[in-house]
Length: 452
Image (cartoon, rainbow, N blue to C red; front, top):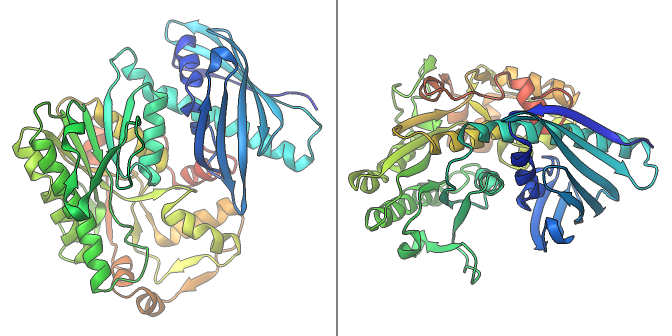
């Protein structure tokens, strides 16, 4: 079989491209969303024929993929020998300068043995995804090239958004310290904390440039009862206040705290468009979000800029609401929830990571920021678009009464989502979304044809 290639232009110098690809985290970043990277183990580096091993899970299959650096010529060529899960094949990258801050990149995959038609299609799909990922990441980083690296502390760094953000930052050359509830490994950049025990290693936070607080229990883990509602509230408010008070007491305070919140803070019955100045709700979720945001007050009082990121439904194949939808939709069992007119305020995972990086470089922004697509979709439209992307029928419908019976209070709130939450402030700041159309975002995340 002939070598598979893809050539494309990127807004980055050839040296920047090689720096990006030479970092071990780049290999994790280049794993497509239909695979889940697990543990990563680095043995040596690009200049000495080192290896990077990444545990991979794809559906019910799991294994270890090994990347061995077979050739590395700075500003010339990077070649990897890939074996194990999905291999064997040779993977190479070459960047040719086309300007001071521009280059043409050629990616190539050469299987060692003739692949089956299915394997060849899989490799083409992988190459197309890696082309998109490399271009988009370099474009996100380009405006801030040449700036000194940041030290970023992340809570919730093993979760869906936190893990992607951490990898993105490492590939961009920044230092990432993770706030971890489990005992930290000696010599790592992890910082131990326990919100339930009101305990945090505050001294280890000294000198951090930015803190991103993403920790919180998943509201859809199980049916809401009194105990779980208390867990949802405490997982957000207790940890946020503990962290804010610790940051307020530091000698070298961070210049920015980005604290997660949610679009559930708005009045779900508000018909029409809602921006950051919109009316707040009075249901359970809105109350939790208000307390969640209020818990950052100690940091604000200490002079730390605080951004309250009100996030919508994150589109991701590896986790969150979309991942839970995929199995029934692929079985042809997907359908509209209730009347289907309720709005789903979504955002593509790559746009959310890009938005966080963008906010880290804004010198004055503070207060609420809506992290949603400019084009929210009704549940009916979302259902039809996902079915079309997966090429599956969506004739099923879950009656409103069944949703309320199955999910209780959470089901009632889901059916009441009339507000279309718009990202007014972030767009005025100049942030550019990769994905405006829902179908493009779904295809880009699921790797099914179109997508930026």
